[in-house]
Amino acid sequence: MGKPWYKQFWLWFVFAIPATSIVYSLTVVYIFSQNQVDLVAEDYYKKGKAINLDLSRLRVADALNLKAQLAVEDNNIALFFNKGDLKSYPNLRVTFTHRTLPNKDFTQMISGDLSGNYRFASAEALQGPWFVEVESFDGDWMLQGQVNLPASDPISLYGQSKE
Image (cartoon, rainbow, N blue to C red; front, side):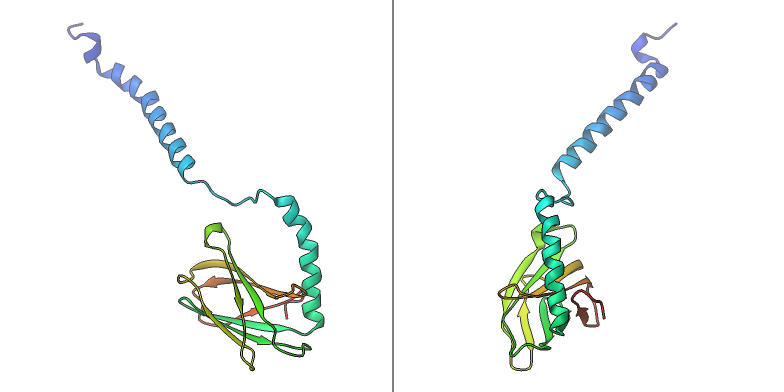
């Protein structure tokens, strides 16, 4: 017993275990409070009710024989639209929804040329998983698709049936 208690190795070893876990826990709480994940929508009930409406709009797109392909290169986006049974090429609303980052979502209103080619540029280069919706300006029909960017081939957008 030549050493005082505060100079004993085992005392500090035993105190270090709970002290380390407390510091680690506080660090984790701080990190998680600063970086919240927005995977669950707050208005999930309204979104769930809207699914039925979206399905009917997808069926209308199939009935009109509408098809579209989307090509993305950096921030340049080209949409090739086959109007099917429509009389003319309509103005379109294109919505890009990121799977996990809602602050990157955007909607663009676009007009096409007489061949059904629609072109526009996004604010920044698109990377990662996206859900794309193309709908008429009045919202009567809708085409949709999922894309993981960057992609070298055009992505097909579809209605209810994935043909």
